[in-house]
Image 1 (tube, rainbow, N blue to C red):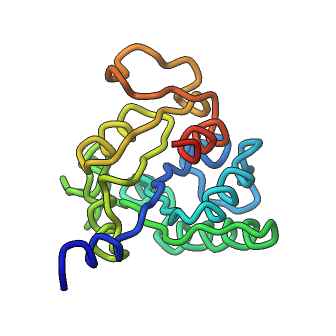
Image 2: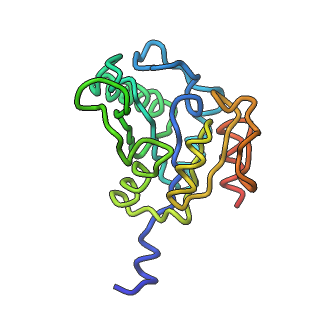
Length: 191
């Protein structure tokens, strides 16, 4: 296979942080009845779907390592979100989460390569889904999201929802700051 054929077979993705980017920030969210989308998030995801981007959620879930909830609850919440998105003609193509934390409980207490700001979840998704990271984006509300995107070779965007509400200090030069996910998607799809 030639390089040009291989390049055409790789996909563009938009990696999204979950809490504070897609949904209203609630620390250690795992209950479907406590989930609420940030206004415009569903429209943003649908616009990415229609523009041909893979939508991949990458989320740190240290609540698993801390013993607040289990992996089954993380998966249950993601199924709930999938159902809400499906009803709105939108979808997340893949979910990746890191259950680890260096100061938690049991088998999840570890230093890993998947916990943002490290790029492990993005790199795994790229391998699993044939994503071209250099043509992809990472959108999140924290500097760790920006750092993970940069480390993976993506173009990062910081949104000012969740923890990013008033953040400007420490954002690397050249990283766009958008009011919310929908504004970030307008920027991405205009490129």
